[in-house]
Length: 402
Ligand code: ATP
Ligand code: MG
Image (cartoon, rainbow, N blue to C red; front, side, top):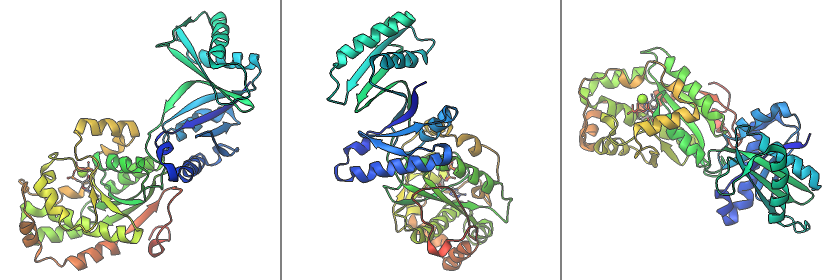
């Protein structure tokens, strides 16, 4: 048996000149972090890639699955590592080709990254190709083969692989700062959060629960969603804010058609306080233009008017179907579609305002003691932490579970 490894490729970090070394180290550290004790060998950086040697073959699939979720990973290869002896190379090429039992055609694609190896790439292709063809009877197709066996000769050894697994792409967690994401238990905001995680941000979620006016079911699903997102290594913490009494208070004094917007404006104010403590650079929501009544340009402006930091909306131009597609792919869809008590539907009128002005919503708020409401919200805060390599809890809220 040959040694097995997972060879991790990235592309974008390759471009970032000065940052490159630090970012590569970050990616390697993040991969080591999500693997935990699944691997006993070090995660190494080799020639613009990251190598995870697999000592226990039974853990290979688990290692592949975990690494394939890590931001910054473009794709990974399931690699056989051999000596540079001709027969070892041939047997490895054969083994790699045989990982695809249904294939009818193949190609060998060799590359030399070591100058002390005299056989040229084309010669390697021919030699290994002839061997695989003789052993399997597969046809050669250089332009669109069913299986492409990649062979890379490096210093002292050879990497051979045919199996490639796509990663999320993006940037390593921790290179883009922290964002505070308004995380409902719906479909959109988990996808928006994931998009930011993929771009290298550490995500801190804030979930507004209708408790005590309704049960805590949405909190459980938000936690479940955060656990799924945490498999990327980019989801650090989820704050839960009991919001039901505050919504009730709003509903008692504010015009019914403005309620949702006033809930949202209060959510933004609370989330900004949390963002300040977390030293986050932006808030994130899952809004998409025109998707529901509260997501018109006018209403977005009416909500944004209370924000002092950027409110990012990574899904603003996406169709629901595309968002659902991503939710399924990243694994949040199921938890996002369980019936739960959603705080937004509390005390809701039949006809919410779709074209509110800032003046209107400000007038709707005049009888509210907003400072007190924000501090009530923060007073009821609880949180859950998830494994995240680049996160340091803020001093003020350090202990587990307030
Ligand atoms: P989602 O699918 O994310 O719940 P939605 O389509 O239900 O979004 P809205 O209800 O208008 O749309 O919510 C818009 C955004 O406001 C959400 O994407 C989310 O970022 C934030 N938000 C709404 N409700 C909550 C909540 N209970 N807790 C935290 N954030 C929320
Ligand atoms: Mg929702």
